[in-house]
Amino acid sequence: MKKIIVACGSGVATSQTVASKIQNLLRERNIQAQVEAVDIKSLDTHIKTSAAYVAITKPDKEYPIPVVNGIAFLTGVGMEAELEKIIRALQ
Amino acid sequence: MGLFNELFSEDLVFLDFPCRDKYEFFEKISRLLLEKGYVKSSFQKALVEREEKYPTGLRTTPFHVAIPHTDPANIVRPFIAVIRPERAVEFNEMGMSDEKVEARFLFLLGLNRGEGQTELLSRLIHLFNNREAMERLIKENDRGNVIRLLKENIN
Image (cartoon, rainbow over all chains, first blue to last red; front, side, top):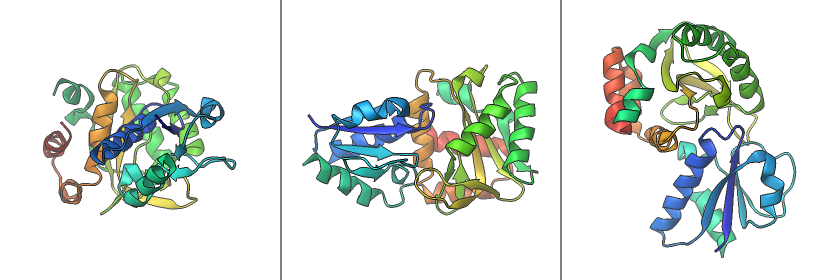
């Protein structure tokens, strides 16, 4: 199963909230994927094995995988478009 | 039900809270929370630092909000404080942009990774997408009603 990672600044809850939201949205569309909230410090390790990175903080460099705007899943604004990016990355 | 009542309380709802800017907001609210035994004295500084590094303004509709929070090490007792400032407070927008938002509601998250907190936070975030509830929230002038409204929609 392909993996999507979500990372935020302090790991109190925003990344888990977004990860959970994405998981539910994918499930509604019958799409299988592992959506994981990770510590931003261990981001580079996880990037290697992930299909997409859902960012809640500004990425400070380029990544070899698609970077998706995680804020959209908090505000609901532009959420569909970002979800489409995730779905494409999972194909 | 239990967790909602544990984290939210009328005692931590502040309407028409006077503050010039987010720094004054952090100062005043930290003092209040320290006095009430919710946070450690390190809280204010941690809040300011985290906000600088990872801002928490959200461009929600029909009005913007902010969800400032910091490391659980600064929390004595978990809570979610609800503040409607007298005037909108400028916060930097979370994530990708360099934009600013004018937050008309502030949800100060005093979370410590306790059980169920993520789910509750998810439902709070979901509330931000509920235009009708948000429109009711901004008009509320009674703290008890604010709690009731939140409970209705989040619990």
